[in-house]
Image 1 (cartoon, rainbow, N blue to C red):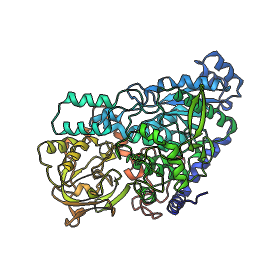
Image 2 (cartoon, rainbow, N blue to C red):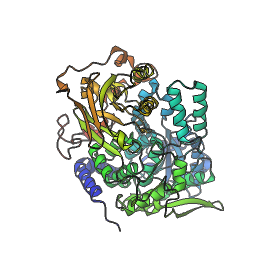
Image 3 (cartoon, rainbow, N blue to C red):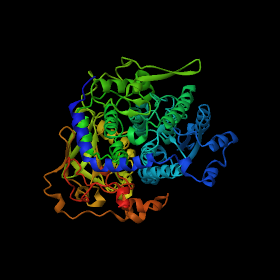
Image 4 (spheres, rainbow, N blue to C red):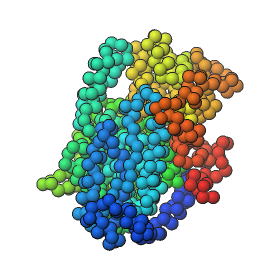
Length: 635
């Protein structure tokens, strides 16, 4: 067996040591829950009767026997998310599948599932990140009925899978299988979509032409086909061992998709009967490192620089951006999928997909191969791919060689030697930048700042020609406390146009850029955020900023000690009182209690005490001991 990459081993050991107390506390609580009898044995007869009052007679009779597993389904179904529309039929598929093996299944509850593609650039985007923690809470409400022996999670998109993951870990004494819906068939090429967006940003085509292009891109049930946050979620669930193998990118309208959904349900029943595969044991420090590595090796979404921290925290595991940066330095980039290339996820799947990536990363020593999964011990099952033969689901080894080396490369001959997600820091704070799609000549920018408080103001300046120069656009007061940390992807076409005009351009913000972070250098998630007194609050128009992704630098040049300046205040137009309408007033408490971006921007967990980026040194602004919030409450 290939030995583990020494960087991967070192980072894993560091995470394990940092998480020793929190992980032990989490496992203690999950072990206590596992030691209790199944929920059906604890519930009174009246409670159990309530749980099955609406079920078909055959399910009631099986439930009355008190011996067979009951599977809880948590669904993020709605039919305005193309990726989630197929989940409408999945509960029926699951119920029948488990009946076939002598068990029952019920929809335990639903979670919200908002579409960032619909809310992009709109006030509703300010609820997007917070929806992740609300989904985690909704999952907790669904499973807290304590009537289930295992669970199946139905979700795909950006905040939904991280939220389901976090909520399921609160019930880590149960086996949990994730069942996705798969991508839509390919529409127009991604390069053509980007070209039309750039033309519209310059006013060269009208809205009707733009709409026709977008409809040709997003055109059917299934996940959007670029490699953004949703599809990054699916890759991570594969290497986390929470999927049936190679299920991520199978089209929703195929017979194979329903067969895989049925297989996921039966696997949950098998795990419950065998007492194996509980989520607390599947997800440990090694699993989290594997998820980070898979994200880096495929050029995945920058949103996971936030989500992964909160997801790990739910399992008592503490990670930070330094861990991600170190892992990135040792992770080969094996995939070129839009926005890191021109291909979409359907082409990625056809070239070899998750099975090829997983086997290559295990062979190169970049993944922990000796982990628990819902398929058993080890990752070998995830080297295989499913197919239907005479209506039966069969598994075969995935391709040994990439079928398109412009999309997928082996670990010994990668597109680049590192994963492309880097930490940058300096007197402007700490941030992350994704450079896998940024040309080397654009990775070091030194230019005057143009400071804004809203996307709208920045776009107005662009349209007025005020940004036609070498410039670093600074957009502040966009952090989790300020307005929920919206994605700022509406600026991408404008920044790309400026870069195409020959200007040196970069973007610096305490907000998010999205899973579609592309070819313009963007230092995002700047922490601490401006509203919390972070350094971006001290930046002025014209300050020269240096963003050096190669050396990990984000700093002002020649401005002296900017922290000595008075902190700029958020204008009245963007103050807390303005965050009303579109449901934003309902989330005021979230804005007031959320943790920092590098702590996962979460309201589910308290502040960390382990120093961000400093290994095991204590944080100056943190409590004396690293405690997850449940433990603090219990105390």
